[in-house]
Image 1 (cartoon, rainbow, N blue to C red):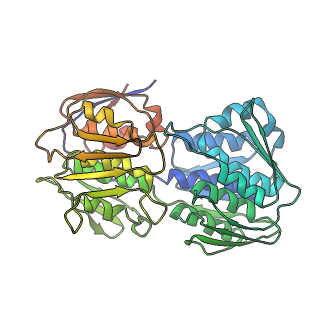
Image 2: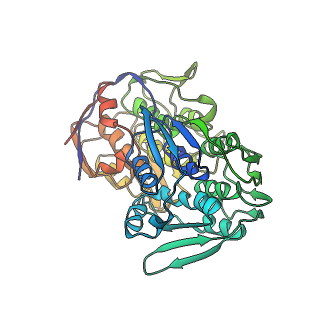
Image 3: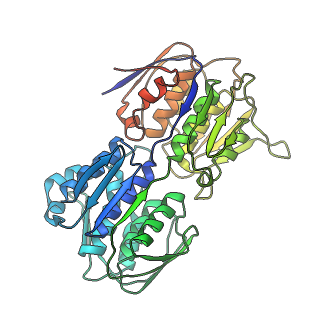
Length: 435
């Protein structure tokens, strides 16, 4: 189990560039299975989860060539479908949440898709019903082996259908879209997710020859085509990482510039941080965060009641940033209620922050009230374990702002989502060592 040792209390300064978007990469990489032609993808983040998926594709028989940093070509002209039934696939697929999105492209192009129950973060239930109900609507037959936790869908030919999704699942929508592009006839998906990463997937598929309309809305119409061709695609910067660096700058009272953030795809993120009292300045496509010498003050609602920050489907706030926002609030002036609606175990890491001296009331598995210190009381260093990607980075930010030397174990969780995070933080002045 890897460990970070962090000497907190230092001001940071300089530029930091966000990596390619993890959540986009997991969708885009699966889409290469939809064509036998070459697909080039740029700005792929060098992180554990993405590298696992690339290895899975290689084991499936996809020809992969590295073209440069973050740039790869993929050619799925000789896919080994027997691998899907192998013990090795059952083991490898289980270790990655994003492996579920292999099913849609495999089903669409080859008439069958299998997946072991995927792993990932321990943040509560993450059901797969939306995915498989969508495939069944398109005419696939579903089967499930309870003993091996192994899912399968099969169809001779998918047929377009109207469907109203039971939830606006991002991965569910992506999976159904990838299945529907090669289905016969027209598919209509209502209550579709419309996150920028899903928009990126749809735009890439359209360049490959798909006919998807309504991109960016919650109503997608897909006219099935016989085949798709190759393309080149460049991924967006990771909005969760951008939010992480905003929170880091505020908590450490540092002056930072976050480069090439794709402002137009950030949605509510800058606005929510401004509600916490954090100053942000747009400089071209960069975010400049000045040194918050006098701290930052949380806004109340117009009637004076306590601010509530909650996650919601796009264009609402992504749930992946609530852990970061919660940590940032611990040093703000004022109070805020954090409402994490989607996952019932994601707020349990707050006990580590309470150990560090934060004033937090965990109301229930979904809500926490934070009373900020206004920097009058600094968090104190401690030893902790990273439970998931986002909580791990939140604890890392807390440690960088704390007095003393902290230790974070199980940093493999952080490495799953953040590329060379210790090297990049040291470049802007952080005292962090990987043990």
